[in-house]
Length: 419
Image (cartoon, rainbow, N blue to C red; front, side, top):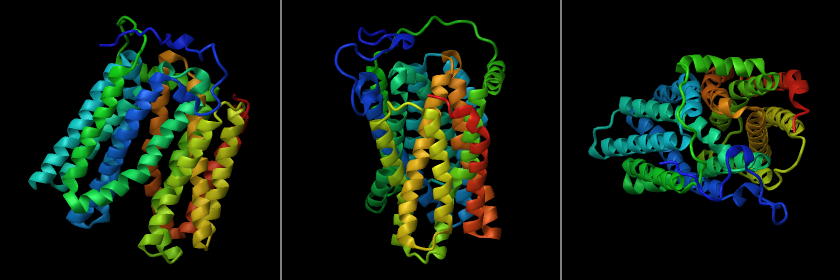
């Protein structure tokens, strides 16, 4: 049951404590609610990455077909594209903490079911596809709810710090989770990683229970869900800043971020063995963690619109430099920079969306970001893979990055003044 607490003010009036100087670093961690949820997500995201990697390994072990891996990616993408706006609308209508209780419990249940099927020897490829689809369906409701909860966790001036630290938990887990899966699968089997992921959701459920939030407003009558979805789309399109930020995020999701899916191609381009390819593939993850920590440390800087434009431009230049590089160590170093720029871009975009959006529309606006950046990536990877097969990786990846640069230049007048 949601209950008010004595130490947290309503979202519209959350402020830094009056006493003491402004926290000099990682400001979001100065707020109890944020620390609780952030700590729970660290545990949960490690489990999630263990499961994501294990699902792919399990499918490849069962069939050996890359097409089956592509179907898994599509199964995860479709619910995010089709349902995220519905999820954002629901988040705008109901108690966000209760919705998160439901999504976290369902995600845990799906992981435990997959562990049981695998341990019993009953698992089939279609089970993995279906459970991937169901998990992504839950994420379509969970992601906008978590983002819409942000104003209850930190004051407005600490949004960038909070979003950057959230990025660190996810991307840091992208390094630790697969490494743990690599140790657990040979020792205890695939089922162990699914079971552990199911248990890891308990950390978020405990954190949610401990949050001190303002009382939920009384339930009110709402228009039909799909009318509110349409209202959300009209709100985004009719707001010049939100429209520009959303279009820029869509360009990044379709043409920028999918470069990461093409890294295995560089095994041939750079003549790499498995170990060298592994280091190359982990370089963007290292960059995202470093970039997220830097943003969280210096998040009180003004001129976030200029930071957004600069990070997008540097991302484009760095991706083109990587795509055309013929030297392995240089390529690794460039990819670290690419990852850092990607984090700066995505965290700043989310912060500006939060700053610009009315609270009644917050869930729908951030759900559109989920669609454009997370949902569009598999679709962009399909197109980029087709282009790489016909034009070669250097030209295809450079051309895709150039599209992001062109969109950023066109939209720059709309965003560069934002603070």
